[in-house]
Length: 147
Image (tube, rainbow, N blue to C red; front, side, top):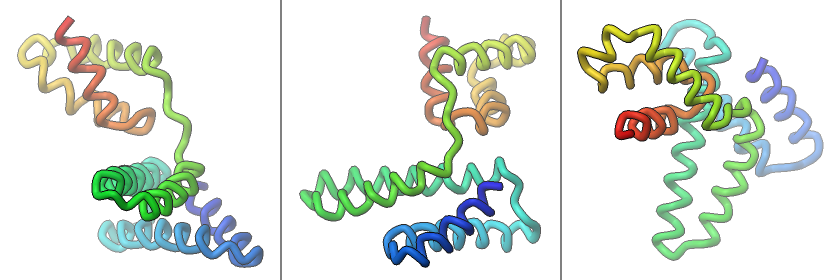
């Protein structure tokens, strides 16, 4: 569904002459295709979202690097690309909702949590990856463990 929407939007952008959007969408589709070739099968929606999140993370890192390096024009260019990419990512849940989901995962894996509270991080990230960014999940988990 996401992949089809990206392909359709790419065609619309081509017809309207929006070069930047076409370039960003081509790059996203190429990354999805590369992952499909590696996996030797089509990606499901969750895997496509993971590809998009990885691209968003890379763009954010590039923006930070360009801003630190005194290159605001390049940072601005990458910000425009990031805005285009973010339109295809599903809305993430709020911190409160995420904390509730984390608490449910901890409750379901209480035995592991009691043995090694750090081991639950991987379980939470795996189960909640489609709902929120893994770094956000980890940050909330660490904050709740220090309380």
